[in-house]
Image (cartoon, rainbow, N blue to C red; front, top):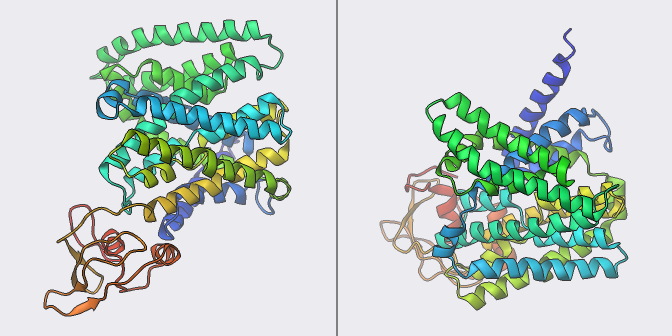
Amino acid sequence: MEPTALPILELGVLLLLAALAGWLARRVRLPAIVGYLAIGLLVSPFTPGYVADHDKLQLLADVGVVLLLFEVGIEVDVERLRQEHGQILWAAPLQTLITGGIATGAGLAAGLPPFGAGAVGLGVALSSSVVIVNITRSRRRTTTRETEEALLGWSVLQDMTGVGLAIILLAVFGSAGRSPAFAVAGLAVFVMLAVVAAWLLPHILRRLRAEHDLFLIISVASGLALAGAGAIAAGIPLALAAFVAGLAITESHDAAEARRRLLPFRDLFAVLFFVTIGTLIDPDAFVQGLPWLALIVGLVVVAKVLPAYVLARLIGLRAQPVQLAVGLGQVGEFSFVLGSAAAVAGAIGPQVYAAILGAVVVTIIGSSVIVRVGGRPRELKGTSLLDDCGVIAKGALGRLGKPLETDLSADDGRVIGKRSRIGWLAALRHHLVPPRGAAYDARVIWNRCMDRRGACIGH
């Protein structure tokens, strides 16, 4: 038997299980990421049963997170953000600084060293780009287009601000065996490499535009090479270096085409990234770290969601402030990257690291679910809604917790649903496990029965 047969089989089975778990998670109105994390926990060395080859999985996961954040960096369009959401350009960085400062102070007060407290603080301040993209593209979303654009723009500016602060933090505190001067010199070398790539890569891609295979190879190789160079020269995590590399070439039109061609590979490897996070969750350390988990989740709510809401109201965004703030209310890939760097440096213990991983799971579930039932639903007055029995229901939407504006009625005038008051808990229950044929908030019927073009897709 070939020596690579078993690893290939293992990888294929893991991807199939991850796909199944993601599908099941979506059936119960949870993000697919939760399913990927569950599969990782299932094959981790901390749970009974089969243990996956972590080293091979980690290599593929590193490739995934590099491509993921390289693509996120390419996606940044500061000029477009300035034109469409100019006030976000200062509000999002301010929220990142406020959240990071409060969370870092809380970490210091809880006894963490400066590097550990800073890593936890920045991890809390940054949201998950993957989760936010899923929120804005979900078929069951209730966000307005303005809210979705504001969420994407806000998270990108968070990343830009947070990565800059993280690079400084890692250069000063996190470079094991390096003096600060040597770390700064390595960072300067990486910046020069990024500048050269920003000038050279678009020219190469433009010449290879018709050569689809070479175009893709150069795109992927550039992201991996720049990320590796940043990790070696500047001593920063691969993921942060990949984001900076993508940011360096974002202004190029050809970079946008590279991003489009990278998306399928990014999605595939990103699955392995979240599976790998699941393999790192130690249930024993997680139980011991529950107080830390409560602290981190509390900081997400108090130090991130609340300031984001206040700032969104203050600058007068056309977005729904509650949904914007809740949509940002999770920790994700950057939190994991920073937490891993702090754990390797010995700045945080296993309990704190397990709490960070637990916070990734808890906050992703919380923000993804609550954002669908928070704020004002889309206005769908006068829209025909098909239930699974073929009955056409007409009705206006009401805010959750408020009566519907009209009865839900069939075409023949027969009333099939009365106006009713739906509380937060009832709305959340109906959203997660809606009773078959029930007539309640018309938004839920719309999302479950109609696609974007208005075609019936059933329950």
